[in-house]
Amino acid sequence: MNIFASFEQAEISPSGVRRLRQGHLWIYAGDVRREPAASESPIVQVVDSARNPLGYALYSKHSQIRLRFISRDSEPPTPDLIRTRVHASLARRQGFDKPDSAGRLVFGEADLLPSIVIDRYGQYLVLQTLSSGADALKPLLVEILIDLVQPKGIMERNDVKARRLEGLEETKGVIYGVVPAEVEIVEDGVRFLVDLSGGQKTGFFLDQRDNRIAARRYAFGRALDCFTNTGAFALHFAASCASVLAIDVSSDSLAQARRNAELNGAANIDIREGNVFDLLREYERAGERFDTICLDPPAFAKNRSSLSSARGGYKEINLRAMKLLNPEGILVTSSCSYHLAESDFFGILCQAAHDAHRYLQVVERRGQSSDHPVLAGMPETQYLKCFVLRVL
Picture 1 (cartoon, rainbow, N blue to C red):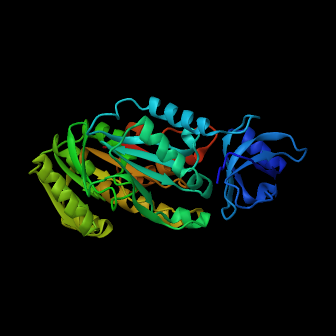
Picture 2: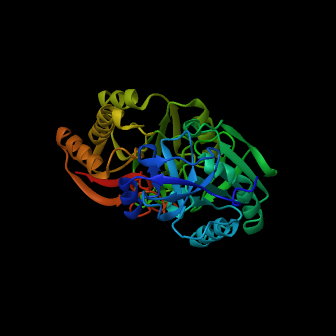
Picture 3: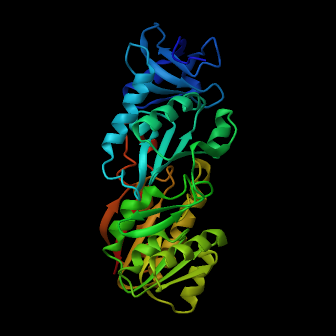
């Protein structure tokens, strides 16, 4: 099937048109006035109520996000357009072409390639196609990546729940070449073993890379890394701290964290399994004190309905952390919950400081790494909030 041979039409409402003109790339099902005649069309032409052409979009008949714009041109898209977009995205990311580097090469909507994610781990790539329209482009994307990047192998990590909302099955596996069970990467001098088939996201939390490197400059003394996962923040802290206590509830993640510590010869890291909420209360009762604490939890707010409980969770862990810090201590605290705005997150931190009878200095206000850029007009591309705070 040649998905660029012909294009059905979809008509959108005036509110959908306004959304598009504000720079957003998504049109929701409620703003689609007329669906394409052929419901399986992966790419459609979008028109307004007067049949004026607005551009072309990936079409997902089962999704609430019905249309994802890939072009606002009057001319139909071609394979060359996708190739040009991928090439431009690669050109924006300097420094990720080394044999041991890791980074995001394509960040979906932010790179004008909606619902497409491409990560590089050394000489291997991980691809995600998170909508039915993007899934139809997968063979073309693989062809382009082989030509432009020349990887040794490409892993598909489409084992994510978001695909169920698209009417797609969850799949993962090698789709080109050979991909080893583990890949070793280096992040500003720190070495990590990454499981591309079973690790979080596409194998590693690449979006926190810049924050880990920045936080290392402030870390000192006795450090506590909560929700350590495979030890990323802890290993960066180990170079500048006397000792690091790294905790997480996942035994599998901690096993990898121990291997990463051994890989770096970091003998000053103590890795323990346990629930962070419980352990923070336990450390407070025991009178423990730290000079640096990192809080990098999973998203507490998966949707708007869970925001209330999420706020309580964020306040709880930050309040406990502030009580455990020595005066002048450093708190590195993050939220990856898109539905919790940065201003709301900062308000929670201020409330926690008040209740802990502490003052906060904002040392740095940060977001996701530079290879995860934000597209103006599309707030969904800005999800990670990170504060480096001095607790007085």
